[in-house]
Image (cartoon, rainbow, N blue to C red; front, side, top):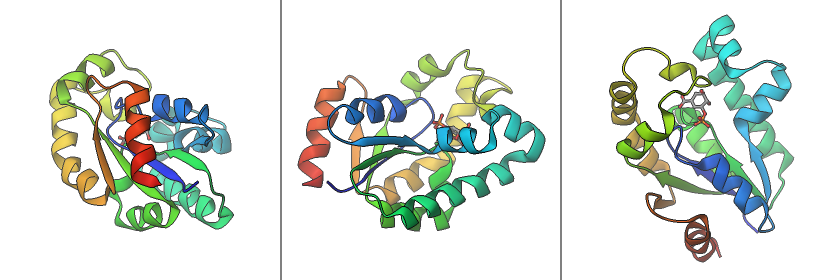
Length: 168
Ligand code: S3P
């Protein structure tokens, strides 16, 4: 099976859907998890100590390593900000089919309120912050995607059915 890459805003369900696909014959990997494991510290720590630019370098490194491994049959969930860097977008296409999980701001606000693990959402009003970042990113997500899936009110089974049809 071709690799599937799940992109989308924080809280859109990439990791949850990725784990679900992991039970359907794919091998699930998550770029944030790989980074945390390699660095042996949390994403909050990485941002606080070394800054966002350093974290973005780590993301590119992980993508390159995944490309070099040449493994198939992966479902790869990537951090919400990863596709913003052009170099990463090329690597995503090299890796497999890019699936954008599009989610409304209203749903994201509900899911992300009170979140403590995402450094980019810790300051200011959560809805304003999500709207700001979404405004910067939504065209990028749509442009890089091979497939766009609206996730609101759709079960993982439904999303899986769409993905299966689109990648075969
Ligand atoms: C980020 C998203 C996070 C994580 C980091 C930065 C972003 O991943 O990579 O906090 O810039 O959108 P999730 O999208 O898995 O939450």
